[in-house]
Image (cartoon, rainbow, N blue to C red; front, side, top):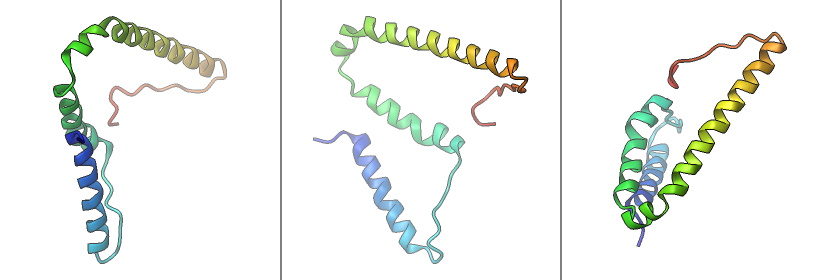
Length: 101
């Protein structure tokens, strides 16, 4: 049996193909990242979390948290290293407050 998120992906592909061939210009419809992150992604994540077996999740909670914390620390350190390197090369570094800028 296929999870609902897989079914939604297949439906999206089919509707995309129908839309592509139904339009006169055969132009691919484009959308921005804001639409994806605020409209499309949350239902997929919530569906996956809703159908996750709670016993398996709590059995692996220590491993999940360990990977989350280590990945956060490694990414933070790499960002710092890259920033220091770019400043040593006299390359201007600008920071963006949000993903959608």
